[in-house]
Image 1 (cartoon, rainbow, N blue to C red):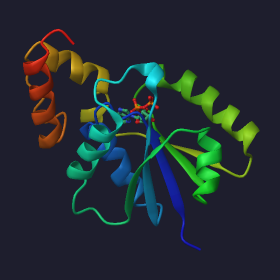
Image 2 (image 1 turned 45 degrees about the vertical axis):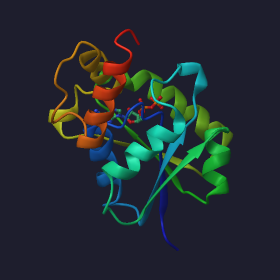
Image 3 (image 1 turned 120 degrees about the vertical axis):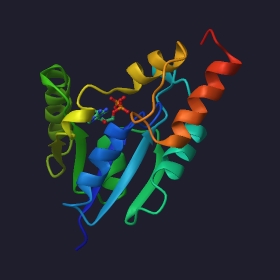
Length: 164
Ligand code: ADP
C-alpha cells in the first residue's frame, strides 16, 4: 500500500517554508497531495487558480506530488483521496495552540487519520505568506523567501494595485 499524505493550506502564496515542508513529507510518504483550500473567508490576495498555478511552477520537476483544490471538510477530503495523514508545518510555539486544536478536532471527526507536524529549516521558521505579502506590498525584496514565479507574481500584483 502506497502511503499518501495531504499537505493542506491556503498557499496565498506558496513560500519556501511551504516547499520545505512538502519536500520533507516526501521523505516519509510515497505520495503527497498539496491541497489548496479555496478559503474565501480569508480573502486571499491570489485567486485559487493562480495559487495552484504558482505551486505547479514552483514544484516543477518534483515527482510524486499532486496539486489540487479542495473546498470541503478537510477530513472528508482526506478520506475521499484515501490519505493516511495530514501534514502541517510548525514554525514556533505560537503555531502550536491552533494546530493542536485542529489536530484533536480532526482526530475526533476521523480517528483513522493522523496529523503529522514537521519543523521547517530554521531559515524559514520566521516566514509566513502574510509577512511576504506585507514586504512585497511596500516594494521590499522577497528574494530567497519565495520561489521565483511567486516573486514575479507579487511584483505584478502590487505594481497594478499598490493599495491591495
Ligand atoms: P492555513 O490557512 O491552513 O494556515 P497556510 O498556507 O498559511 O494555510 O499554511 C499551510 C501550512 O503550512 C500550515 O501547516 C502552516 O503552519 C505551514 N507553514 C506556513 N509557512 C510555513 C513555514 N515558513 N515553515 C513551515 N511551515 C509553514
